Each structure stands twice: as C-alpha cells, then as structure tokens.
Length: 183
Image 1: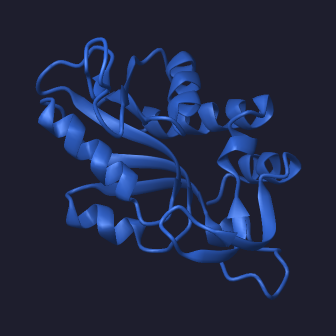
Image 2 (image 1 turned 180 degrees about the vertical axis):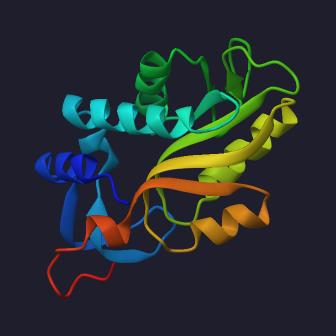
C-alpha cells in the first residue's frame, strides 16, 4: 500500500512536475520528481525519515545505512537521526584530497548495509554505490528508495544481487495525473 501521507507531502511541496524533462540517464519524461524540492522541504524529509524507519524496523537485522552522495545524504542523515542507526556516505568517486576515501564514515568489514536513495530510474547509481561498499568489505543486498520510477531499476539491481524496495512508485504518485502523463 502506498504511503498516502508521503504522497501528499510530495505533492504539497510541488516536487512532482509535468512537462518535458531530460533525465540523468539521458532519457526524457513528461513528468519529473524533483528530489531537491523534496529533500529541502522539512515536512517531506520528516515523512521520508519516518517511512524509512518503519520499513527498516520490519527487518530482522538493523543494517548500517548508506546514502549515495550527493542526493541521498539528507535522506540518510534524517533517517539516521530518526532510527539511531549510524550511516556512511558512498561517493561516486574517491576524493583527490584528504583521506581519499570513497566511503565516508565508519564501516567494518562484513557489516550489513542498506543503501538509501531518492529516486530509482535505472538504479545505476545504487549499483555503483553497492560495488564501492562491497569493495570496502560491506554486505549489501538491499536498496530502499523514496520513489521507484518503474523504468528498469528493479531488474538492473536484481542483476547485481540487490533487492529494490520503494516507499512509493511512479504509479502510486501519478495515480491522478493528467491523462497524457506516462506513469
């Protein structure tokens, strides 16, 4: 069942936009879920943290949280505060200064980690983060996202041994969208 309070918060924040948009993977869409709008809105952040916390509480193990830089950092931070579970940040590439880490934060070998993400379209950024976390010794089997655009992320992640869970899907979010919008 869709998280109706979260859907309402995303809509109230005007994070769902209609028109012609280019997506990060190069495709186009006639709707856009603006993560920067919902990640900077306190009501949305609170709803996301609560929903992520509820989902994580259902699991047998309480894994360390990981956020993909830059987009998922606010999400993983508020979820960490909500749950009391520590988190790490997975960079797209190692920084060229300081420690040169690709994974920021404390991570022990063999530690179970769940990746938190904002929006899954192809899921490639989560795949890349999982590979970096695995190279650092973590066990990663699950990705939890705010919105699954239902455009192949689930299948791509599965090919890399990752299960996708979402708080809402594009179908949920666009249930009452204009008829010319492809969910």
